Length: 305
Image (cartoon, rainbow, N blue to C red; front, top):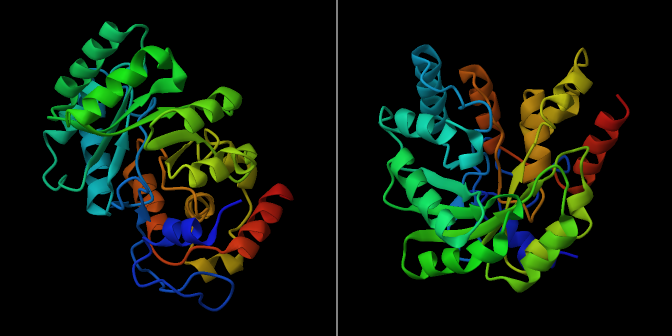
């Protein structure tokens, strides 16, 4: 499955947390967590920000002002990766608007996608995304849901060689197209893969996460809250007392810490349009993480609610 080197590498971003602590959790309470990108050794905060629906607010000035506050809170609390796509309607434009009004965005890891048919259309789309975001180059360019990946993969490799992007990857979601994704992961020169994984949707544990570890691919996790269904499942139920053993203070952190404690996972990208929810999410990037036994306890607890 996952060898010792990859296990330690996946957890190597835990600052001052290189030994097991008491209570079946990783040591160093409230330390800032970072996870490693295998292709380079660079590290990232494990909690990023998705933008599907939440940043698709068009020209609404009030809604844009709130998104500026959300993005500011993201960076204030140690955020790095922002993930978007041309598929998300006005989200990229709104992100660019917000970034132009943010002061402390130096830690940003910009990630978007190409989502169209044909090589030339893909190039035009990626160049448009650069203009919308206001960035000179993206840190990560991904092929969204494997759409026409055969046409785009060579372009992404060329752009990486020319330093027009730093990393390249592919995405899927909703647990779809895993067989095709597995083939692409094995055969193409990728740095990242993005997929769906959460405490109830764990199909990726069987083949994709071990394969990512094997292939030295960073893993981005989408749909970490199952589009809010996880919160509906736990509504009315208190957080278990033992969640404090891994520095967890709310259900959002419970779900996110489950994800990013998997040694093959690099970053989870919850989406929100609220500052208070952003701050809750970002708290999952600090403190101890659950070990394997605690993760199983978490699964059983949520499944039985």
